[in-house]
Length: 359
Image 1 (cartoon, rainbow, N blue to C red):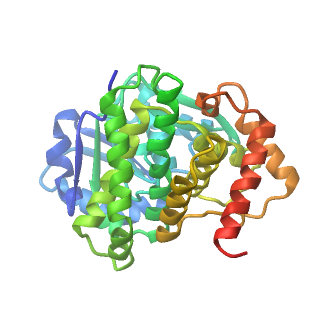
Image 2 (tube, rainbow, N blue to C red; image 1 turned 90 degrees about the horizontal axis):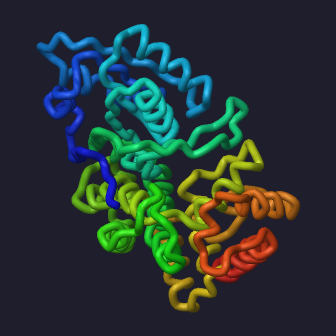
């Protein structure tokens, strides 16, 4: 089984083509925006509607894809007779808008304003409880109707988000490889296809070739071919790759970190360190492990726990325990993983990172 967005549009100035690219979907639009998403996209989106009489409502949402926030957006869709829900922002806005459209039976378009995660292209949302704790993964019968990425918006976003996106994308190939070894189903419960693995590998190869050059472009707010390549890798190749392979230890490690509550580490940074943890669990050879460490150092991703936050030993045991609960993707690894084994791998990976940094 293969899944992907029905339409993917990327390029400098893509927002100006929004109405032209999406007009077949309807005439009444709800834009679910993050604060920064509204500020960076509203003007160009409105230009794309010049001369048209479409109804447009922009709603700045509360910052988390929580149960009450999604309910609030559902009520707006019903009251305003909305045809199409459009997410404008980062992963939380994307997840909330996707859930809203799904529950209301509407079309969904995603406009990511940062390339920090692969959420735009995937057929699922991460839903949180109102207190910020993890609630569930909500899986959809299909992927978004369309994804539109304006490269100039990404180029003008803080570079830390692009780096986090590369961290999230870094896991895709290694998680897919592990899932294939154990004949696990794909993230969407199909078989893992050769095409899915090829996309995951292309994602990894693109990161390695263009990561550093893309950071230089983003730091200087310009769009270059290298930046466009990395945007495609972090948004499309990572998202479609993950959907058609599966996740493993890196994403479980992230969920373990979120279980502590109040953490500051970006999703992608946790996934990058989680990728190193997975390689430790798999007893990867020294050359491969150090090669991934090298990439992380080259683009500014963490190779030690201290770079993610200040964790006590008790915290690490909690992370390990919650990353290994029933249903977590870490169980796609060969031989399975217990909380004790994961705790040991976290400590060992951190020690190898400290040694690498000479600490």
